Image (cartoon, rainbow, N blue to C red; front, side, top):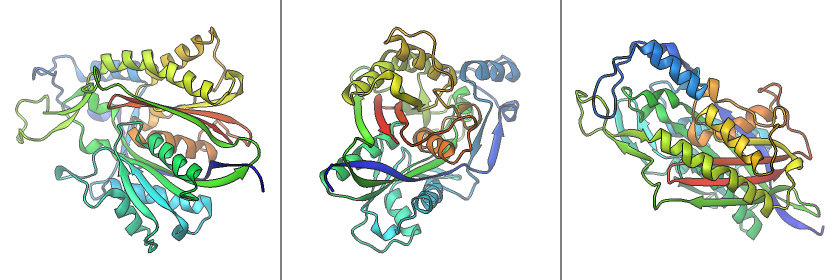
Length: 360
């Protein structure tokens, strides 16, 4: 059969933890400012403002005995089942995360062996040709891993690749920082497969950028805002929210447009925009600015599926989980059909941005 080799999504899977944490569960939390000053505002007022700014009303945490590689494995099982493949035929397993396995009673990141190696072990894959490795790239890590997988497939080096995004942000967020309410846990996975086609399908194009000169420290690890915390050496995820918000608005819309241009895709062809979700209001603003690049004010209805209000920010797990929920008809009213064109986009620590155009 003549044609070109494309990377297509053969199957998807996700894992949403069982521990539901609502905003009201933070009513008894002691919040501090970055200078170590205890906040005097009532927690109800803090929580109400948080909801207004982010749209996040709840999130899910992993149970005490689980770690990130566990939930990565759960998502992997679902993706392999969905793809209906022999797991021994996988050429690569790539796991995107940022903190390794962090235990409930020990905040130290555990990366050895890699989470991908742990997942391969849990899957009981015996094939030494199934290469397992990790990628850390901030929140855009899963999408960057998919981009790497696409290069492997297009080069002829691989035919089937499992790409997982998994994170347990509840383990590394400062419980005394208001931003802790942003973060959640979860895992999502896809199986990519090589397919020969005379017409473009699957991954059509992708673009990535890293802005480290001015913006590398907008997300970083730092000490707790609570000056009285017992372990002074513990580090937690910290964010410069205002500057990150502005950076995202200034760069993500153009990055998406650049990717569309690279793929020779018209704006009117887009069926869904699947974007990393750290803040609902920010994503709405990004979408408006993206369409404004085409001088469009009235946005298409239901173009951007959202999960952030009930799943929170799950970092690298956001996009694969979002895709899995839609494909399995678990996110009404959203549907994805054969022939649809999807846009994926993500922004996060680095600062890194990537985008991808995909044809179903």
